[in-house]
Image (cartoon, rainbow over all chains, first blue to last red; front, side):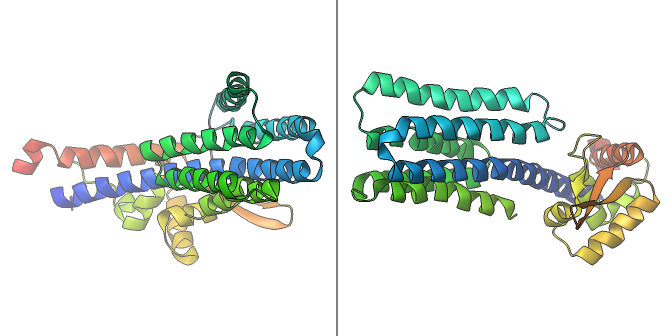
Length: 182
Length: 101
């Protein structure tokens, strides 16, 4: 027997709902891998900076390059289902790094603490915008990251890099685990 | 007017087909991910996947990642066509002339 118009409309609503859920699920899964990677990278960067503050530039150069190479490798896994993802990923990470470099030039001289706020606050803003436009969990991640890092900047005068490791790397890692849960 | 495919019209199978239809033709979705999207139990999902596989609407692949077993599911070309046909039928039911009649 043919379904009634009400049943047909309900079925179409169910299809839209599942498709939105499936798209969100896949998006969160892909993002969670990158968040875990950059969470670990930032955590290590902050910890090494705390241990060897005089090597700050070298430490961040190494961890960012390692993170970028690993990130490209992760993006390549998704290349089959999302053509062009590797180039888009490189443009995104390149834009963040370029933004950080230009802010340092414009605002120079910056203390290491001031400089360390540029990337997390910029990335937090990107997540908040993305969350407001499409997926609400990104809004929560962006807001949490901004608040925790800024609190760290304002209040963590002692052991600053250790607190930033938790606020920045820790937020990314916890967010990654959260995105894996539907 | 045609009757929509009864095999797909069942609510859980409808969700399975809708979720798999979001993937590219050569893309597979893990069983655990599909279960989370469809929001049902292992047994229920397995039973409905068996029905859909019997109709050749889905393909099921079982392998190992290291020592861990993994089940992946994909929509077949026949399943994709059937789902498109099903959705077209639903839209046809909702056209003004069919609602009035």
